Image (cartoon, rainbow over all chains, first blue to last red; front, top):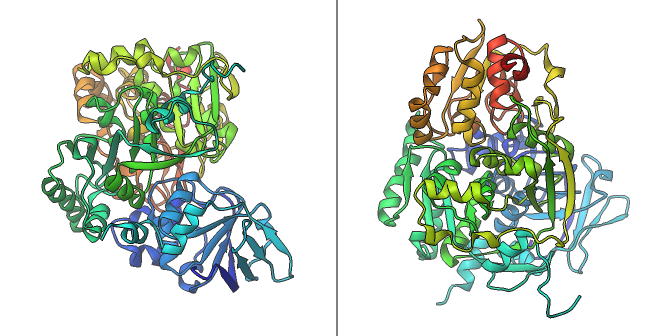
Length: 167
Length: 428
């Protein structure tokens, strides 16, 4: 997301309280993201893993990412090409994990007005990130601290640490 | 306020200020803290950290401040699990880690059991139930593996100074009602994210009356409230316990300074322990909590006492107090996975394990077991009454498994009667 804008992103609509165990099911946690990715969200939305494309976004209800500290829950979404998750609120632990892995999260109070299959744009240049709906409406999102956007730009904490490593 | 007067602070602020090498921190500001202890386990630890550390060409900042616990994939059930466990053991040797606890219990229980947690510390854990450490007056919270990498390389981590939700419990719990009921009630009241990643602090006479094992249950399930930390100020109970397990007195000096000042700005919530009934959380959310009496028609096929949340020494004692001299009902399988080998040994010495065996229990290894859902889980269609922390759909087995969460008292009473039951009736 170095360009800081995204257009025409397909929306996958999910409900409230999407938990880490649904994103990265325990039975597959001994495997890598390739395997976990095939089972991502299978307990709540079976068509997601086979159908998601690079650049799609997830729009969910409140409390996205509750549960475990397993960062594969965020990693698997990046692995599947998800560009951002947009929700009214996130689990704090998931929030940290997502940015550490370079996954953009947008805290958007009006997220649930967005519809399944809608094409949205993301505008991240200013202080207030925006989601642009297909009907032209702009939805304001909570500001993201600069040091977290740096992580998104770098692709996560590991690439950032590499960049900052003294030569 | 007179600027010469020290500003009143919450326990959370004091702990974070110490770790940030500051005299005072304000709610909402982002500060960088020095980490006193980092704990990780076989799943979140070496198998994830080693490749990243190698890629960076970096080393652990201070191996004496790191504790590795093997608890998620032990005992290894297949070749994949065996490989994960082997990586953890090989890496521990290569990194020369001085503190490794291998197959002797669950991280949140063995960490304080070995005296690693003392009041005033700032700690992180590679597991979401890391707030358990808050019961010892530590600021401790869970992080993912990549963030743990950052800690391992720098010894530091950022936090946003949280507000404090102060849960004040007056009165005394009835016999057969426990800390698990208190925390299930609060999770039901505030919801899975009601803690908003702030600090929760447990206080009041009913909390002070709890032993450390029970206090750990409160702090543990702060995670299910969506809090970052779940704190309890150290008191005589804490210090007696720590001295009792062999922590040197000089390591406990100054412990009395870690409390919330009377005038500190926090959000108080009042609860009455006297009127609390046993609580049960129905599938598939810990926040789906109601009084035990509303579940009398639920017939469990499995009664499970396990996990850091629900199989500590006091939990085993609670179950035994209900099952003493009795046997579980036909059609109910009672499984007990004591949270640590030491606690199991103590329970054996007290006759608690024999009571559970005589009641028909199958005793399982000292590991995360079915709770994590990483290995042995419950069979298709099972109805489970469980002393664990989470009952998400599909977590502890196939999506068809229905898990009801409760205290160990309630698990035992339900096993005994063959339907979800109130332990107060059995104990009366």
